[in-house]
Length: 86
Image (cartoon, rainbow, N blue to C red; front, side):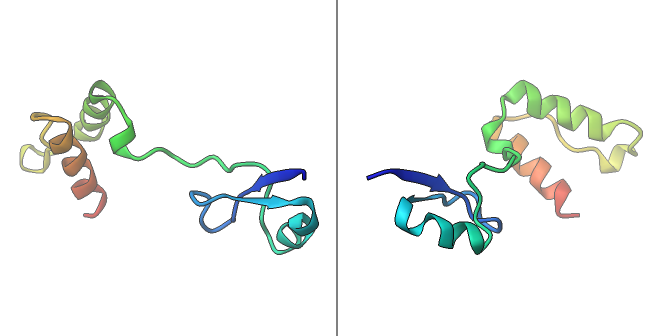
């Protein structure tokens, strides 16, 4: 039986595989055959890329507001996420 992977518009991280009998019902309710472009989280990035992002954000900031660019990957991710939540 022919199947397709479909993506929900509100939560593309949980695709479903449907058979041809159910495909049209999913498509009519907003599901898509094309995976949307989902930005990768910080944990998926390399340490060099995380440090580059921190350096970019730190440009023009006061000393007291600088994001720390030291430590292990988990420290860099936590620092960027904390900055996002300011």
